[in-house]
Structure formats: C-alpha cells, structure tokens
Image (cartoon, rainbow, N blue to C red; front, side, top):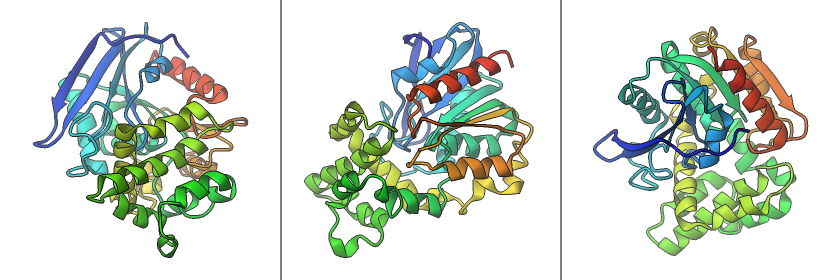
Length: 313
C-alpha cells in the first residue's frame, strides 16, 4: 500500500432535506479520478483507504455514505436505501465535475459499486471489487443465522447473547427490534454485540484492535443500525438482482478485477465465484491466506496491483 496522505480538500454536500455527506479529495488534483465506496453499510471511510491508490496518478475521492462516519445525521435510517446511495454517488460526481471515474469497493462497497455501475455504466472506467457481497438471502443466512457460527462458536455465543432464546430463529429481525429500541442502553448494547461479531470474524487471524472498534458507541450505533436496516429490507432489491444476466450485461464491457479472500466468512467466496460465472470477462483472484479484510497482506497487495494497472485508463 502507498504511504498515508492527507486530503487537500474536504467538504460537505447536502443530498436531501435530511442528509448531508462528508467527502474528501487527496492525491493529484489533475489525476485520474477514483471513488472509494466504503463497507457496512454504515462503516464510514478510513484515512488508510487513501493508500490503495498511487497519489501521483490518482485524484482520490472518499465519502461517508448516509448516516455513516462524518456524514449527518449519524445512524439515520430515514431516506437511506441502496438507490438513495446510488443517486448520492452521482451527485458527488457531478458536484466535483468528474466526467468518468474508477470505482473501488469492498464488502458492502462491492454491492454499491455493482449497483452504481449497473445504473450508470457510462460513468465507470473500471471496477476493483473485494469481498463480494450481493445481499442475497443465502449470504445473510450464512453469516447472521447459521454458517459462520460453526467456525467462530465463541464469538457467536456473544453475538446471540442479547437476543432471547425464543427469538433466535431470525437473528436479523430480532436484532432489528433491539437496534431500534427507544431504550438507549438496550440499543447500544445490541449495536456493540452486532458490530463485534463482524469485527471478530473479518480476518483470518483474529485482530484484537479490530474487535476494539466495536466498543465505540458512535461507530457501533451507526454501523449496526444501518447494516441491519438494509438487511431486514433485503437491500431494497430483488434477491440476486446484481447477478442477473440483464444487469451484468450493462457492465460487461467495463474492465474489472475481483479479489476474494479464500477464508472470508463474512462474504464467503461462493458469491465472488457466482459473480465470475455470470461475468467471465472480469478477472477473479482468490487470496489463499486471507479472510474478509482489505488490510490482510495478500489482499491489499492485489488491490494495489489492480489500481496500479488501471491508473492509465
């Protein structure tokens, strides 16, 4: 990854009567524009995310999606859907007077990247996608109901603890009630447990620093509430929509690299493989010694190689 840099411009953009987004630009003012779409939904961008791109070649645009990071109001679920976010990406592009740009996203960021590219294929120069997530019911069931639980039983025990045993047949729905509780104590406790489950399972080697992020009230509240809101609503799209042939046909011409951790339990490799099968023109790389995180050495190396390759497009 490239050395950490600071943005040369930060700003906010009002995208609705409710939501105002934070954005920042770093790298080369005259460089090739790239937009980084963060995960979650609700995760927010991180300063280290700038380091996937050569700062001499790229104009690097990061922003926090509705309710996430420095965008306001924090954790707000109103007017917060996949298609609102797709419109926001376009609003930022227009606001920054970018004609076409490269799109980079991992996890939920890969979902949003696909949804955006399929909606606005004429604006996308390339796609770099990591830890593929298409929000199918089968993917949610594996991580939040039964699947990853068999691999991380001790973390699973903590994840299910806030939910009464009688309500555990649908964990996403049961958490929905607690994450929208008017009791702050109940809501924050549920948010921390939800966030901790993902942080504990995101890397091949469990990272205590990653787990510690879940202890932040503000981060967990936004992350858990927004994620759960999207998942309870099936991502506001048809099951498997992003993989449908008529949707893939819209982006088939766009150069694309897919990078997937072999032992990713948050967004298992079966989805990346399904995307490659639907879209054989895209390049798929399986990282043999990685889980879900973009920060694992094999994954970050391939991500940087992909952005280096596309920098002259």
